[in-house]
Image 1 (spheres, one colour):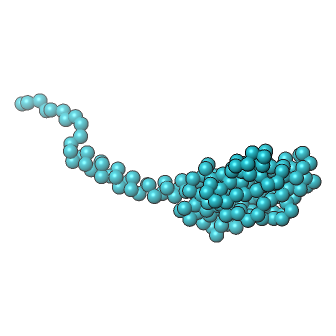
Image 2: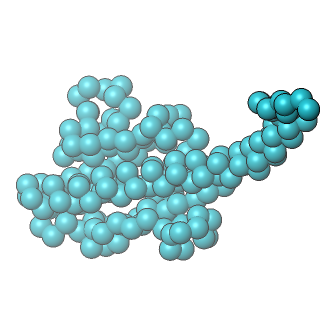
Image 3: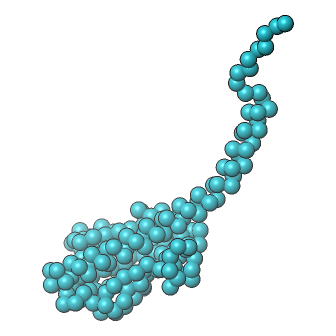
Length: 169
């Protein structure tokens, strides 16, 4: 009686089956992953602006000076926070630089900014002269809004419930 040979490795059939299963799983995962990235980019932009608005309010009260937040739409869009108005967040005019903070579209690829108006924080109580909102949208249809109340508080919410996990506006 001959000894039985021990088989090592994979047969061609097993290898083809494994590759087919991996291809199907990848095809299912890619759209979900792209949607996840789309959502994270919009959330990142909205949260960055909300953080800058909170910081602008704190600086206004702490230093007893008016703080202005200006927006520049277009490609690339940006916002800037400064003591002097207007602030050139695109950096084209060094005399009008944003001396507190700035943020922009180069950090959030595929996200667009819809602007309402400039914001000014009162140095006494951190209130804003006029409440407003700024909306971010992605190429995938995700829309987030940063709302600013008259008291100067900002909050991020989902415009028309387009982003799960956040309160609808």
